[in-house]
Image (cartoon, rainbow, N blue to C red; front, top):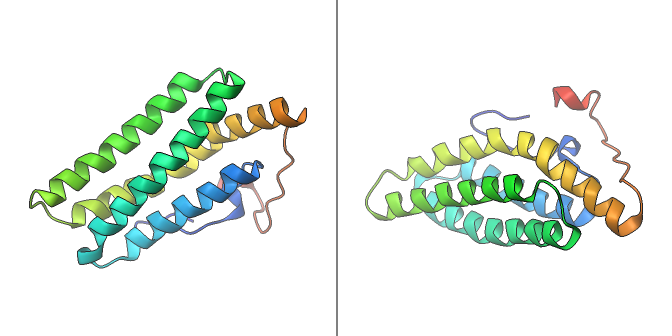
Length: 150
């Protein structure tokens, strides 16, 4: 469940492609830690998130290129916009801006992530699985009564 002060992993975020699910867990953990971090730790957590996201997004973009994913441009543009926002906030805080701006970004990322995962990442996971394994993944979500409500 997403609130303004927490983000934690739930099976509602599963897309059924284990390498992507593992990376998504890490993303959720870092954003969740940012939401709970004291102001003095926010900049370091944001820098950690940038390093993670650069790897995370480039991994997904490599899968898109390798499999000729039809929505590559849209997906990549969204990644670039998110990374751009992260870098802008780092520059702002390093330039003397309020560290809490990093928490505001974390709140927005916590709101953004479920939709991005449900639409763009789930589509990519199905596409890659079908290309690599010949079929789409079956996702078992424990403790999620209705995925739409999660």
